[in-house]
Length: 204
Image 1 (cartoon, rainbow, N blue to C red):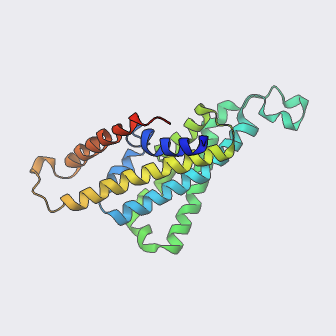
Image 2 (image 1 turned 180 degrees about the horizontal axis):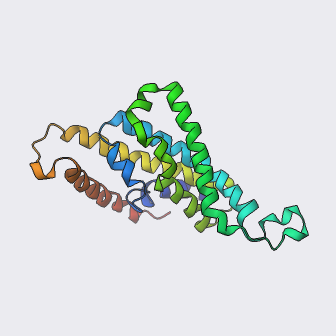
Image 3 (image 1 turned 60 degrees about the vertical axis):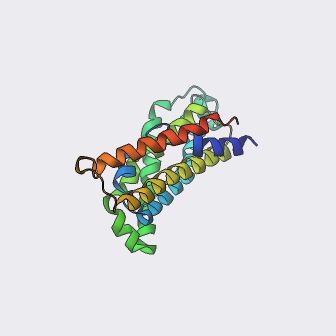
């Protein structure tokens, strides 16, 4: 039950875009059509699901103070927590390379449409933010970290697909010239953020 609550909360209440504004660069740039946005959303979700449990185990069994006690009594005092950020980024960058190669092989059209933003998943703030939130929340198991990653990824996917769908619809609307492009996108994002605030009333 706790994992289900965390899953729902990470999608709607603690949404990476609307609650923490993480991953905004690719969110705004790749949300011009639904197909591309959906592909990037799936990639981000996959990255979160894969990297969060890996980073959880890395943090729990290697980086935390005393985490290396399983190697022997002489390692009980070892504290490698200062390497946390670097190690999290290394795991994310490695996983990104695998995702990039898979997308290029199985969906060349999606690979071409995503362009530079696919390798830039490695520096997507939402993915690194997920790892840092995982560390901050001190989850009890890798399963909990995986559930949190899945919920956070789906929340990010919903946000970018929703924005892309709206932008496709308003492409034929009579928008004032100063607001065309990024201007109207920021306004829509703000309105979507306000809409997601309605989920704050959910008690889990």
